Amino acid sequence: MKTKSLDYLAILFGTSLYAFSITTINLPNQLADGGVTGIALILKNLWNLPPSLTTLAMNLPLLVIAYLFLGQASILKTIFGIFSLSAWLSIWGSLPLSFSLPSLLIASPLTGVMSGIGCGLVFRAGGSTGGTDVIYQLLEKYRQIKIGTSLLVITSLILVLSLSYLDMKHFFYTLLSCWIFSRTINAVKYLDFNAILSR
Image (tube, rainbow, N blue to C red; front, side, top):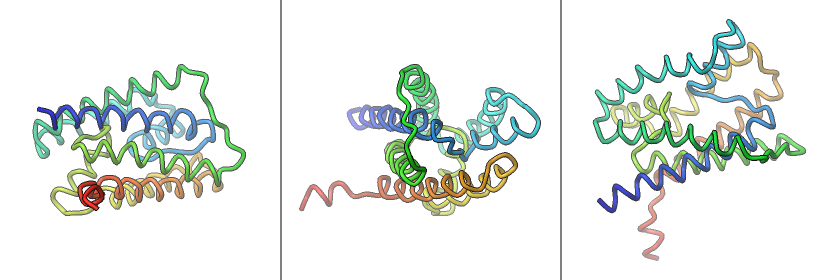
């Protein structure tokens, strides 16, 4: 029970950090996004489809897949992750916090590290934030591909499609952010804390 409670606390803290990074650094500096959100932005720019509906339409079947292949415990943590991320996005978005940094060379790595730590904690606790996170977990479980690795590949493909509305400068800085994001996730998720504490 104690371990389970710590898992949910880790997901809560991780989604808080991830949402903070998105609302206060990513968006003010006009960096793009990958995953389901990135696809929703592409659909909005191409056919003016509302992201609120497209993200929901894509998330629902992914939740069903998560339930079928990842189990009940995972789906509960995923649902908790989705709602906690949504709540934190609303909370941070309502506060007068926005860091429009003087250079994308600062903003890009910073948001990559912060988002990576946040999502790394969520994945380490056995949860996810929904969307393509479910695909990353399936690839890790059935193909032994680390989450950060599959995230980088899929996000890069989505970002290439985002060139339909994204300029090259923001594309490359978003790609840099995603690379740092993926490396940070792997570092946090697979870090052996017991080995560190036993030194």
